[in-house]
Length: 272
Image (tube, rainbow, N blue to C red; front, side):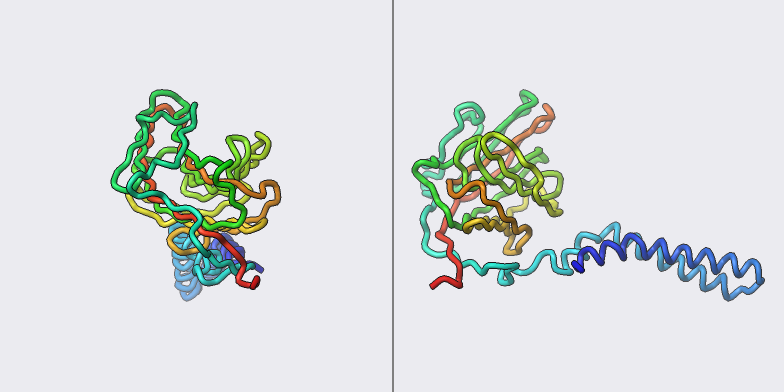
C-alpha cells in the first residue's frame, strides 16, 4: 500500500481509536472505582490529541517524507537525461523571443528587470491576464526539459507554465494555485483540469527553481530539485512553451517575476 495512504489512515483514525479506548477506560474506572484506569485514560487521551494536532499541522510533510517527493536523482519510472541546449533566453534582451498574446497581454504590464521578466497587472476587471509564448511554428519540440526560476509577490489566482504549447486551445500545463500544483490539459479547446495535483504552498517573494520534463508521453514537474508530479498523456506530441498568469476576483494585483528560460533536449538514459 502507498506509504502516504497509510499515513493518511493513521492520522485520521488512530486519534479517534485512542479517544474511544481512553473513554472506555474512564468509564470502566468509574464503574469499578479504580483510579489507575483514570490515569491510563488521561495518558491515552493526551496522546490522541497530540497525534491529531501533529497530523493537522504537519500532515503534508509527513506524507511527503514517506515517498511522495523523492530526490531529483530518484525517478519513478524512466530515467531521463537533459542534453544539449536547444533554446536559451537572451539575457541582454529577455523579451526578444517572447510573443505577447494579442488579447491577453498588455505590453505595459511586462517589463525587463536585469535578465528577468516582471509582470505587474492592476485589478481593473474580473478577467486579468499576463500571457506570453514562444512561437510554436518556430520552436516545436517533442522531448525537452525546461528550466527557469520564478517568484510571486501577490496572491493572484493562477501561475501557469504551459508546455507542448500549440496555441491557446492546445497545451499542457503545470499550474500553481491554492497552495497546490496541478497538471491540466487543454485539447481542441476543451479543458481537463486537475488530472493530478499535490500540495505545494508558494511563499511570497521567494524564488523557486522550476524544471518541467516532457518525454514522449511522460511529463514531470520538479521544484527546487525535487520531483512533485509525474504524469502521462498522449494528446499533444510537441509544441513550445508559454507563461500565463491570471486573476478573476477584481481585487488582487498580479505581481510576479520570471527568470531566463533554458530548454534542453531530453532523452532516456536507456537509449544509446
